Image 1: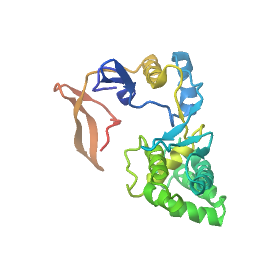
Image 2: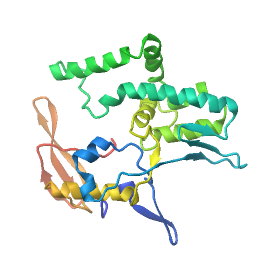
Image 3: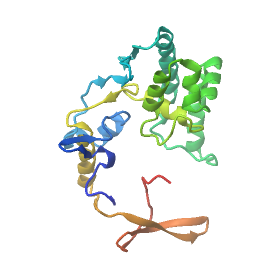
Length: 264
């Protein structure tokens, strides 16, 4: 595994933003799979998943802050507080239908294997079980951008902003990004804590270092300060095939498969 930084973590590392003050940009655990944590036995590498959800606060310049805690909204208008109950219930209902599929490999649309067809069939059945009205509503909002969704439901700009930020954090999407933005919000809602932020013992760094330790224990060679300059490609019968990588230092590493976390 090749990492450009001098240690694991990326945004979960702490950075000094003012002399004497350090903070982790990825400050909470919002949608890390408990299934993955169990399968990797991360608790044996120092990860403590016990953490209470923390409140989400939208700060207002005039002190009229809005808070979401324990699944309820406080400080907003009566209309928006009531609208949030319906909004949260709808997202949770749709997220629950999708929950079994977040940890599955999505088949290609051209996949006609029994396994691929079975995954699509199971997803279709889950959506059908929502009922005709809810299934139609899910298909409608799944194509919306997050901003359009909150515009439909809420009146206060602060409420809209905090819900978009919270739903899309970490997704590399903006409130007006087309398609899939609402799916990112549903992904968050489908977690064990229904998308609430948590800060476990040791912070996010404890999770990152536990994952690194589990990988090394499994035989993974992690090389830090090894930025990749390019992925090596060659022509193959079905198009292009990745054959390895070239580091910024000029070193080339051959591989049968290249898995990249780099955004396209």
